[in-house]
Image 1 (tube, one colour):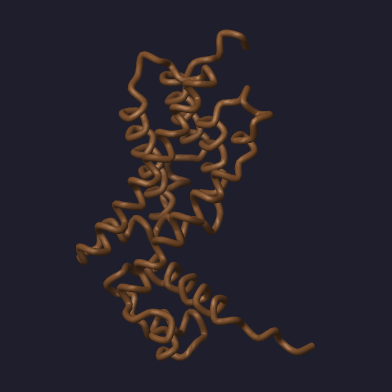
Image 2 (image 1 turned 120 degrees about the vertical axis):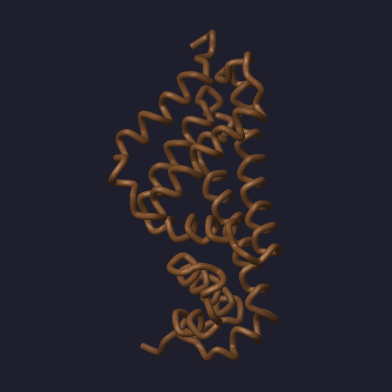
Length: 205
Protein backbone atom coordinates (compact mmCIF):
# COMPACT_ATOMS: atom_id res chain seq x y z
CA UNK A 1 0.00 0.00 0.00
CA UNK A 2 1.44 3.40 -0.96
CA UNK A 3 2.47 5.63 1.90
CA UNK A 4 0.28 8.72 2.30
CA UNK A 5 2.12 11.87 1.28
CA UNK A 6 2.50 14.34 4.15
CA UNK A 7 0.93 17.76 3.75
CA UNK A 8 2.90 20.92 4.44
CA UNK A 9 1.08 21.28 7.76
CA UNK A 10 1.88 17.67 8.68
CA UNK A 11 5.54 18.23 7.87
CA UNK A 12 5.59 21.44 9.91
CA UNK A 13 4.09 19.60 12.86
CA UNK A 14 6.60 16.76 12.53
CA UNK A 15 9.42 19.32 12.81
CA UNK A 16 7.81 20.82 15.92
CA UNK A 17 7.46 17.33 17.43
CA UNK A 18 11.12 16.63 16.66
CA UNK A 19 12.13 19.93 18.26
CA UNK A 20 10.26 18.97 21.45
CA UNK A 21 12.16 15.67 21.63
CA UNK A 22 15.59 17.19 20.97
CA UNK A 23 15.16 20.14 23.35
CA UNK A 24 13.80 17.79 26.04
CA UNK A 25 16.86 15.56 25.61
CA UNK A 26 19.38 18.42 25.52
CA UNK A 27 18.22 22.04 25.82
CA UNK A 28 17.39 24.92 23.48
CA UNK A 29 21.00 26.05 23.07
CA UNK A 30 22.31 22.57 22.20
CA UNK A 31 19.37 21.60 19.98
CA UNK A 32 20.87 22.27 16.54
CA UNK A 33 18.75 22.30 13.41
CA UNK A 34 20.86 19.37 12.18
CA UNK A 35 19.79 17.28 15.18
CA UNK A 36 16.18 18.40 14.83
CA UNK A 37 16.16 17.52 11.12
CA UNK A 38 17.62 14.09 11.88
CA UNK A 39 14.95 13.47 14.52
CA UNK A 40 12.23 14.53 12.07
CA UNK A 41 13.73 12.50 9.24
CA UNK A 42 13.94 15.49 6.92
CA UNK A 43 16.61 17.49 5.14
CA UNK A 44 17.91 20.32 7.32
CA UNK A 45 17.01 22.87 4.64
CA UNK A 46 13.34 21.87 4.94
CA UNK A 47 13.22 23.36 8.44
CA UNK A 48 13.88 26.79 6.92
CA UNK A 49 11.03 26.27 4.47
CA UNK A 50 8.65 26.30 7.43
CA UNK A 51 10.53 28.47 9.94
CA UNK A 52 12.84 31.40 9.28
CA UNK A 53 15.20 30.44 12.12
CA UNK A 54 15.76 27.98 14.95
CA UNK A 55 14.36 30.57 17.34
CA UNK A 56 11.21 30.97 15.24
CA UNK A 57 10.80 27.18 15.31
CA UNK A 58 11.11 27.08 19.07
CA UNK A 59 8.74 29.99 19.64
CA UNK A 60 6.19 28.20 17.44
CA UNK A 61 6.83 25.04 19.45
CA UNK A 62 6.04 26.79 22.72
CA UNK A 63 2.84 28.24 21.22
CA UNK A 64 1.87 24.71 20.20
CA UNK A 65 2.76 23.26 23.61
CA UNK A 66 0.58 25.63 25.58
CA UNK A 67 -2.37 25.27 23.16
CA UNK A 68 -2.02 21.48 23.22
CA UNK A 69 -1.71 21.16 26.99
CA UNK A 70 -4.50 23.55 27.89
CA UNK A 71 -6.66 22.01 25.17
CA UNK A 72 -6.31 18.62 26.84
CA UNK A 73 -7.32 19.93 30.24
CA UNK A 74 -10.20 21.99 28.85
CA UNK A 75 -11.61 18.84 27.27
CA UNK A 76 -12.05 17.35 30.76
CA UNK A 77 -15.73 16.39 31.28
CA UNK A 78 -15.70 18.34 34.57
CA UNK A 79 -16.21 21.54 32.53
CA UNK A 80 -19.54 20.30 31.18
CA UNK A 81 -22.66 21.86 32.66
CA UNK A 82 -23.96 18.48 33.83
CA UNK A 83 -20.86 18.08 36.04
CA UNK A 84 -21.20 21.34 37.97
CA UNK A 85 -21.43 19.27 41.15
CA UNK A 86 -17.74 18.33 40.76
CA UNK A 87 -14.58 20.28 41.61
CA UNK A 88 -12.63 21.41 38.54
CA UNK A 89 -9.35 21.72 40.43
CA UNK A 90 -9.55 18.17 41.78
CA UNK A 91 -10.48 16.75 38.37
CA UNK A 92 -7.69 18.60 36.56
CA UNK A 93 -5.13 17.64 39.23
CA UNK A 94 -6.06 13.98 38.77
CA UNK A 95 -5.77 14.36 34.99
CA UNK A 96 -2.35 16.02 35.38
CA UNK A 97 -1.04 13.14 37.49
CA UNK A 98 -2.11 10.68 34.81
CA UNK A 99 -0.32 12.55 32.04
CA UNK A 100 2.93 13.18 33.93
CA UNK A 101 3.52 9.41 33.87
CA UNK A 102 3.30 9.24 30.09
CA UNK A 103 5.42 10.58 27.17
CA UNK A 104 4.01 14.06 27.86
CA UNK A 105 7.03 14.38 30.13
CA UNK A 106 8.96 15.49 27.02
CA UNK A 107 6.61 18.45 26.70
CA UNK A 108 7.12 19.41 30.34
CA UNK A 109 10.88 19.12 29.85
CA UNK A 110 10.83 21.30 26.73
CA UNK A 111 8.87 23.99 28.55
CA UNK A 112 11.03 23.91 31.69
CA UNK A 113 14.25 24.12 29.71
CA UNK A 114 12.85 27.06 27.76
CA UNK A 115 12.16 28.97 30.98
CA UNK A 116 15.83 28.58 31.93
CA UNK A 117 17.23 29.27 28.48
CA UNK A 118 20.09 31.73 28.04
CA UNK A 119 18.17 33.34 25.17
CA UNK A 120 16.00 36.08 26.69
CA UNK A 121 13.28 35.80 24.03
CA UNK A 122 12.92 32.06 24.62
CA UNK A 123 12.99 32.59 28.37
CA UNK A 124 10.26 35.24 28.07
CA UNK A 125 8.08 32.96 25.91
CA UNK A 126 8.52 30.13 28.41
CA UNK A 127 7.37 32.42 31.21
CA UNK A 128 4.37 33.47 29.12
CA UNK A 129 3.43 29.79 28.88
CA UNK A 130 3.68 29.42 32.66
CA UNK A 131 1.56 32.55 33.09
CA UNK A 132 -1.08 31.01 30.81
CA UNK A 133 -1.13 27.95 33.07
CA UNK A 134 -1.43 30.24 36.10
CA UNK A 135 -4.40 32.04 34.52
CA UNK A 136 -6.01 28.68 33.74
CA UNK A 137 -5.54 27.60 37.38
CA UNK A 138 -6.98 30.89 38.63
CA UNK A 139 -10.05 30.60 36.40
CA UNK A 140 -10.61 27.05 37.61
CA UNK A 141 -10.34 28.09 41.25
CA UNK A 142 -12.78 30.96 40.70
CA UNK A 143 -15.22 28.60 38.99
CA UNK A 144 -14.81 26.15 41.88
CA UNK A 145 -15.69 29.04 44.22
CA UNK A 146 -18.92 29.56 42.24
CA UNK A 147 -19.59 25.84 42.49
CA UNK A 148 -19.03 25.98 46.25
CA UNK A 149 -15.76 24.05 46.39
CA UNK A 150 -13.20 26.78 47.14
CA UNK A 151 -12.65 28.07 50.66
CA UNK A 152 -13.48 31.78 50.38
CA UNK A 153 -10.97 32.67 53.13
CA UNK A 154 -8.20 32.41 50.52
CA UNK A 155 -7.31 34.58 47.54
CA UNK A 156 -7.73 32.68 44.22
CA UNK A 157 -4.74 34.43 42.63
CA UNK A 158 -2.36 33.48 45.44
CA UNK A 159 -3.57 29.89 45.50
CA UNK A 160 -3.24 29.65 41.70
CA UNK A 161 0.46 30.52 42.04
CA UNK A 162 0.85 27.96 44.83
CA UNK A 163 -0.80 25.32 42.65
CA UNK A 164 1.46 26.21 39.72
CA UNK A 165 4.49 25.88 42.00
CA UNK A 166 3.40 22.38 43.03
CA UNK A 167 2.82 21.37 39.42
CA UNK A 168 6.22 22.69 38.32
CA UNK A 169 8.00 20.91 41.17
CA UNK A 170 6.33 17.62 40.23
CA UNK A 171 7.16 18.28 36.57
CA UNK A 172 10.81 18.85 37.48
CA UNK A 173 10.94 15.52 39.31
CA UNK A 174 9.43 13.79 36.27
CA UNK A 175 11.74 15.54 33.81
CA UNK A 176 14.87 14.66 35.80
CA UNK A 177 13.78 11.05 36.25
CA UNK A 178 13.40 11.44 40.02
CA UNK A 179 9.65 10.94 40.22
CA UNK A 180 10.05 7.37 41.47
CA UNK A 181 12.45 8.55 44.22
CA UNK A 182 9.69 10.56 45.84
CA UNK A 183 6.95 8.14 44.82
CA UNK A 184 3.77 8.81 42.89
CA UNK A 185 1.66 7.89 45.93
CA UNK A 186 3.42 10.56 48.00
CA UNK A 187 2.84 13.07 45.21
CA UNK A 188 -0.85 12.17 45.16
CA UNK A 189 -0.99 12.66 48.93
CA UNK A 190 0.71 16.06 48.65
CA UNK A 191 -1.88 17.25 46.13
CA UNK A 192 -4.68 15.82 48.27
CA UNK A 193 -3.27 17.76 51.25
CA UNK A 194 -3.23 20.90 49.12
CA UNK A 195 -6.86 20.32 48.16
CA UNK A 196 -7.83 19.62 51.79
CA UNK A 197 -6.44 22.98 52.93
CA UNK A 198 -7.77 25.24 50.19
CA UNK A 199 -10.86 23.46 48.95
CA UNK A 200 -14.24 23.12 50.63
CA UNK A 201 -17.16 20.78 50.19
CA UNK A 202 -20.36 22.46 48.96
CA UNK A 203 -22.84 23.08 51.77
CA UNK A 204 -25.54 21.19 49.87
CA UNK A 205 -23.35 18.09 49.27
